[in-house]
Image (cartoon, rainbow, N blue to C red; front, side, top):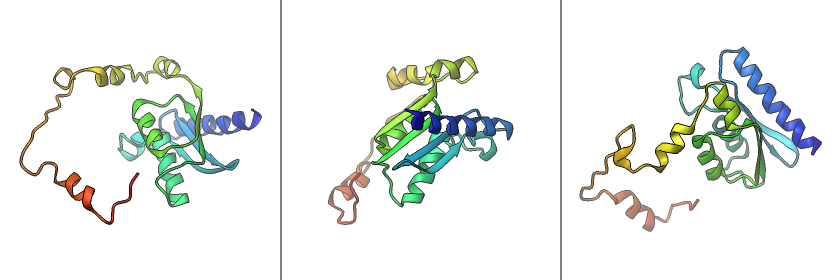
Length: 156
């Protein structure tokens, strides 16, 4: 248990450092076999990239380090319960576990409330605050048709 707390404390330290440098209050470390292989901070405002959350940044760094697109034998330690985007990225990365320090309600209290996104996901496309339109045309499934028969595909 002490090792988990140690890695979480590193994630929290990264989050504090991020704030000190003008970033958001989020940090993340990814561990494999008891060793930190990647770290990430929230770089949304410094990089002008809304996807540059700490978890996504750490996942990108870990995948680059391991030269793979999945983190099967890794554990993610993050300063806060992941937002919906990071949750999706985590599931695609397939780590074996995630530990977090603060809850989403702690983040909400600080002005980072993701509840509206969870609510949007539940709505019909036509009821979302950003309209989603499905347009169908001939060959709209061409990428999937090619994928199904491709000898070069890498199933993930």
